[in-house]
Image (tube, rainbow, N blue to C red):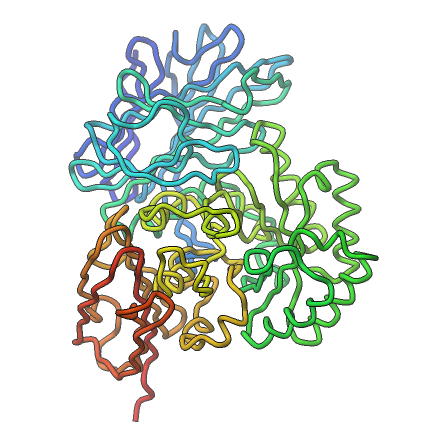
Length: 593
């Protein structure tokens, strides 16, 4: 066996070592000389061939990446700065390649196996071996990734499959998020805890595997590494590991983030006679989009009436998205026909719901559907979907996806209530991999079910989605004393900071900047909490700031304690929040005199 192959991050602080102890292909990772991963396998099982046996390493070729590109989300620019190494390897003289990507925000590794007629993939047992009995935030695997998020320790993880992303905090204080990137022509991966404490992968949606004549490119096995929570929520490693878009898409002016009104959570299926009213409300809110959800196809002359609604909306400077079941856009010809009808009706985006579990065929369907939608200049929201793996970089017309237990779960007509710690874990697990269509912010008193208005409004700041679809009734927004603040919330941000006092499972506090304005959102979990907000953590000195502060009301959940004051960066705020409450603040620079 040759010496381990070592690849360091550009800043020299993260190190991956690839080796073959016992002729098994495995790697270790460290950060700041602290162990991040104990020996972990990178593994594919083929018929008659297994990277867990008889592996020999050969020559390697090194390169580097240093690029930036526009990003929709917690920051306006993604940074892709990494060192890469491709290692030749062989099993019984049959060659393959190992790709290694080490960036300042984590590592990724994958296998590429040359094409051979009739190759059969039996499985993928790649593993992540995080040291020690660390704290873990996770969700059990569900096909639609709408699982509640929980906190435990590695040794107490439940049996059975877990879904990515999964986040842990190491004894050194570093955070790691485990997931995969660039899932294409390959099945979705789940993990389960093994007897040795490592997390082992399985292709749960492809139990019999598949046969291919093409080259096998394994999705990147990703370990995001951050020294603090701000670094964690600002990572773009998953997106960086995907191919960039075609130049025509990279600067396409028809791809526009925006906010949307939506009737399903507030009132159920769309009623034809109410559509003009919904458009009027959307316009009054200043939202860019209105989503016509499930049920519109049951209207009489549905396409004609949809077109009339779209034309009315355009007159109000509102664009329309529509819901469609995935089974109507599964077949290539049917998908093209459907997209042409949508474009002919003037629709700008499609919310595609209920795709099957993400086996190899469905993972390809996501890419093919995004491609076909782009050819018709349609934006996409995948609902009931698998987790994000960075597809939105290649296809920026895919503005968001669900794959998250959001406000649809917290609804009285189905007698469902979100766990109190769920909202304060999500920003550090699911949202690390990509945007999520949580459909936040409901003000109807009967729908709060333990939450406060302050918590509900903060959701729209914390849960990023470039297609930011609000779940509540526009009537309750337009009559709310926080209407001006709600209108100030953007679908994308220039900068994000996680503020002191934040801890996954307990509390999340974020300051987000758009232009010169800052919005602060705080979500509190199950216990009463007090945090101190130091304004000089984010506001620039030498200016005064018009400040709107929205605290929980002391006697009722469906009210705010509102203050409009002038503040300076030297000020600090002590904020006390009850269970499932929150806080929102809006800061605008005061004009200089």
